[in-house]
Image (cartoon, rainbow, N blue to C red; front, side):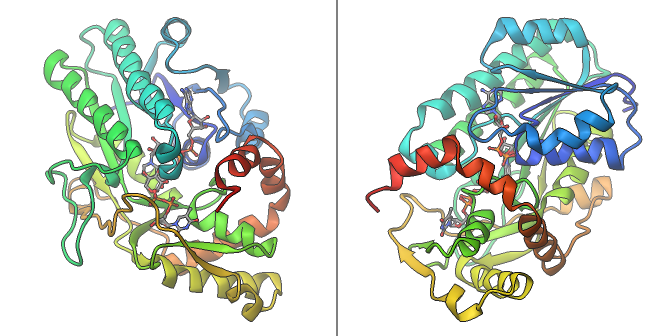
Length: 355
Ligand code: NAD
Ligand code: TDX
């Protein structure tokens, strides 16, 4: 599809959304307006885009809006008439969904429903437009020691987070079949890289190492995740937007499985080497804690479809990506500090004070 209109990004102040906006401006030939709509929850951080808003102020707009607010989003659609919607906005942390699922239902399901309704209203029967929905491999459930998630693997979500994402995926797909709304969906594995909020495994562990805090490993530490550098996720999304078949789902993954505990050991060595801290002291911080409720054992993505159909492939190998990530967090301790003095720390204090 020739993209000559505007792109509306939801959740652009979060981890992947901010990386995607950087990617759009810095690594594509897109020349239109990028409109970032974000509620700025605890996870939304405009610092992630301060360079973009300065450098591209003629082509970048930000609006602080909750996607659940239909009227406010209607104004955005009328004003900017987006050709493409890239929908990242979500409550994204599994542990938070266990402690309080309500916001996950509201943002992930009702918010997505609102956007679909608005796209249907404003686009009518246009086919030169696209609603691209960002989803996760977690909707497929949990794998045993072998096997992979394929695009046609039946959904089997286990957490309030993954169920809310599964629900939104079904709605997006239903709007394609029922109303012929041009949509695509991508289901991606665990991302890592710059700007990731320090509640997720990799940035949490790095920031705790730097502060000499315990490194909490859930359960036996042998759960497996498939890690992908965030920029590779962005390039996959961009390929789908341009050439993905409408109505289709594409899996995006790292083909890079790691047991949590093994990954943590690699991270400890890397942080010790880059920061000059004592490796043995860092290793001593590793603490096994109570397992996450309903903790999915293993995720592993088969991404042959996007590779074969759209020519996408991962470009950053894990050791390179982890090294870049650790360097970024070491160079941006103030970014972590600013987050930790805000809402995030209040939530952690309230929910984890007794553990
Ligand atoms: P994140 O939590 O870092 O960012 C989410 C962003 O959405 C924040 O900026 C937040 O302020 C915004 N937001 C939340 N509720 C909103 C609302 N009601 N209205 C407007 N904005 C709202 O999340 P992330 O890790 O960047 O994930 C982005 C998307 O990618 C999510 O849909 C997530 O399910 C999906 N995903 C994430 C991963 C991963 O590893 N992080 C992997 C696969 C898929
Ligand atoms: O302190 C921790 N200790 C620990 O052992 C944390 C935060 C996590 N873990 C484990 C749980 C998981 O097995 O590490 C693994 C990764 O955990 P998270 O970073 O919370 O990610 P995960 O639950 O796998 O979900 C992520 O990938 C899929 C994202 O948060 C989701 O938004 C995405 O859909």
